[in-house]
Image 1 (cartoon, rainbow, N blue to C red):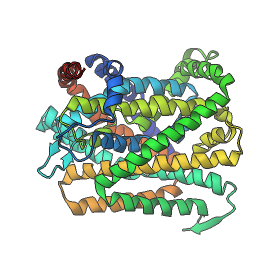
Image 2 (image 1 turned 180 degrees about the vertical axis):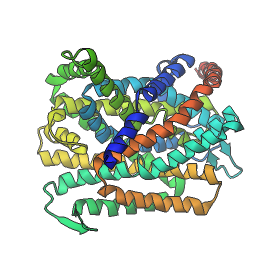
Image 3 (image 1 turned 30 degrees about the vertical axis):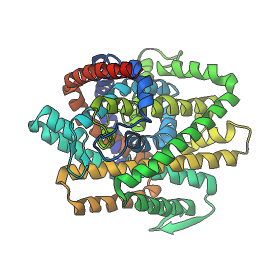
Image 4 (image 1 turned 90 degrees about the horizontal axis):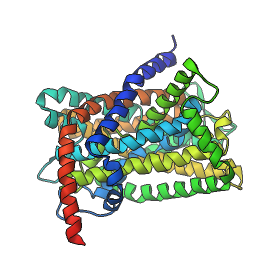
Length: 472
């Protein structure tokens, strides 16, 4: 049996029915226990994104913490992830991605709340928090092993999947598709032929990553608070323009997405169950890859926010899933369907590249160039966010050992440089596996602590409502 087949079987096992039920079930449970916080408090959450608490402890502003989390979530998952989801699971995967994101907003709220409630802040203002601490402190020291398991899986995900290889691989393929689509400029490395575009991407991205992450969280936050809003707005505007330009196909696109989500009109019996399950599995797994709700990564950034109110940071964290999946991923999916990109033989970023190149009345190469820039910004900021996540996990495992953190940082940079040369399918499969392994201990913690979350939410909303009334 080939290595890829073994990886595929592991991926199918990790992201089988039990995992999907657990993720969706956790989101539904938390939605009920918080009385659908994602619906009743979304407007105030969007306002709190841009306001800070005075005199609060932490390392970065709430907006900076959100941008660091968004930097890690708004990445190749929004472009390549959506494309691979709808090609492998059909257009209906987008429907399940949105459904998972809706309930995932309650999950992300819970993660942000617990991250602040159980974080450690030392006398210098240095913050450490996330699933490893709310598992250990919230569930009891006898569960510390589960927190350690999360930290190990998350640090490996940073190096081997989500945080490095998938991101730089997506950038490299986009650059190659734009600058050297016909492999006219090749170089031999260790007996294998690679395009100069891919080699150059590895060098440039690796160098820029090193320059930023050496400065730590504050420098990462400074970069992401500028880049993330800019790239999100730019991408939003381009997708809207493509959809408007193909407005006559919007109705058919929604019909196709809904029909495909439940197996298609012609399918029946076992075929219906199989195709619906495939759409659901791909939609949920790629959705989690994109917005990371339930994965446990975003609360590591939330724990560093300057806030004294856990519920408030939970609301701010929740907006990340709304922006990432319900807005950006939905727009990506619609552009793929209305332009017919999902019916081509392209794969990965090239599918979205086709949509950008043919969705507007401009030269196809211009569309590919615009996508390349969007993907480069998206993926680069994701790399920065995940280095922070991985370093914090290492800090939890070994303590504040600067040597160990530096070793991890160099391994991270090496992975960034090597990611350009790895096969697309294997990169995404490995990332999926580590995402699932990370999610398991985190979901156990969220379920066990859901009662505390319900109590904290009730008290916070009552207090916040009183403060808002006094302010009027």
